[in-house]
Length: 195
Image (cartoon, rainbow, N blue to C red; front, side, top):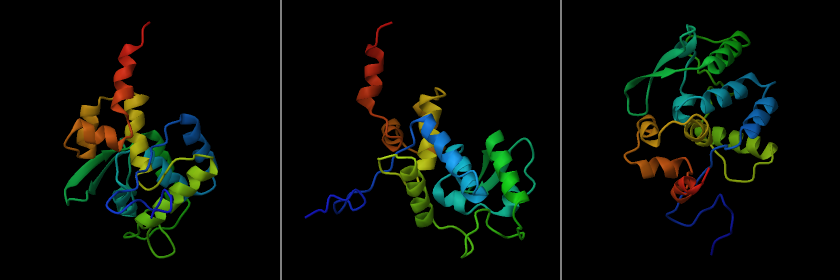
């Protein structure tokens, strides 16, 4: 018997979280977080890069302390490979503001918590809380930020799914479309629209 709770799926299934699809909702969350530099930077970095939740929380002060205007940082990904991540102007300004407003030791995590660093379940709860605060009704969590980046790269900026596959390390177009909550039928229906 299932409880009907969206956060308790049937055995063997997974909880699917959504991207934030509406730009006004993204703006509302930015406004909500404006007085919390850590959370604001976490949100801005998450929706502007393809970093996974684990990669975000493992960023260290040393990864970004010498961040120049070119916005390139090198991090070790979940598979132990070093990858370059290009940060846009919003990310750079947010990181610099966070660093200037806090004291960091060389080996500190960028997103500090009372226990040292954030953990993925905490990030999940934070994102769900922010989305609920701006009246979003779907399921949101730690992968929402990265999905939001991919969703808007495709829908807002016109990036091809095949290009996004590589950034997500996916093996098929279908996997990327499922991850970004893009309905293939609806995407095909766009071509039926007449001008």
